[in-house]
Image 1 (cartoon, one colour):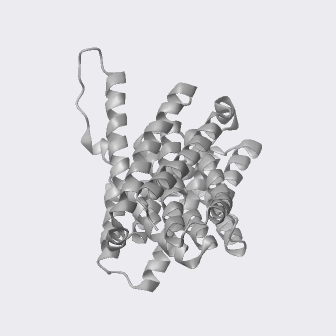
Image 2 (cartoon, rainbow, N blue to C red; image 1 turned 30 degrees about the vertical axis):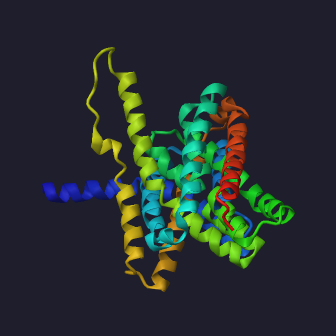
Amino acid sequence: MKIAADKVKKKIDILRFIPGILLVLAISIPAVYIHKLYKPASAVAIAIVAGVLIRNLFGLPQKGEAGITFAIKRILQLGIILQGVRLSFLEMMQIGESALVIIVSGIILAILLVHHLSNKTGLPDRLGTLIGVGTSICGVSAIVATAPAIEATEEETSFAVATITLFGLLAVIVYPIIGYLLKMSDTSFGTWAGAAVNDTSQAVATGFIYSDAAGKVATVVKLTRNLFIAPVIVILSYVYMLKKNRKDGTEGQKKKIDYKKTFPVFVLGFVGMAILRTLGVFPVEVIGIIKASANFLIVTAIAGVGMGTNFASMKRMGLKPFYAGLFASILMAVISFTLIKLLKIG
């Protein structure tokens, strides 16, 4: 009798997720379809805008809350794990020491300086961190992967995603114009696009708009940059756990750090997929399917983030996140461009 009761309980638990999952799928499926019809339209941008509008114009039914939370947490983590198949450690070894110096320097400086700016302007600490991570590593993927590790709210995540997406789209237009005006070589421009443009698809698009050769360089540099998402998430998670312990603990009393909570386990899955890709375990066709699945899961999770976002909370933040995103984007562009010139790449 007990076994039968447990089975019924599990079915009930699963059923409570369905309304919310159907809601996010009702956004993510059309968003992906629109992107396929018109490539410049970002599926992520469509999903988050649609989610925010639906939540704030029509409200969020209570029955949908469990499924939306499931999408933000579990579906998101699965999407991030599958994103690891995009990366190959062999490709990372091909870019050279100079490009690696540019990537590492850009990531460290962007996160630290944007975080400093956020504190000075009164921007929420976690939102500043998300904007810094999104700008310096891999846009939306880095934001949604870092958010649960530092316990960011849906509003903070949504604002960071919207800000990074906007400046990433502007970069696709502005970077090639600057490249042509400065008569940059294919190698130097591809390195610049791969090291500075936010999202992977945007960085690759920026490179190929300039030239095929620049596009290939941008792809390798950007994917190498994406690999740093794993160590950065672990470090930030540890730092925020220390901050939380200091805040919760009494003066002069240190609390033990729960390393299981500090370390985001899904990062292991991400790295594991990258290792399998490097070892050549997956056929080309399978890699394509996994990539498409990862993208769809990320868009679905982002739809959930949008639906969990309240306009009132975002309104209180004002234009500060926009300024932080602008500062971060310009910072990445200037740092990477300066280092390319100093290291004489291309």
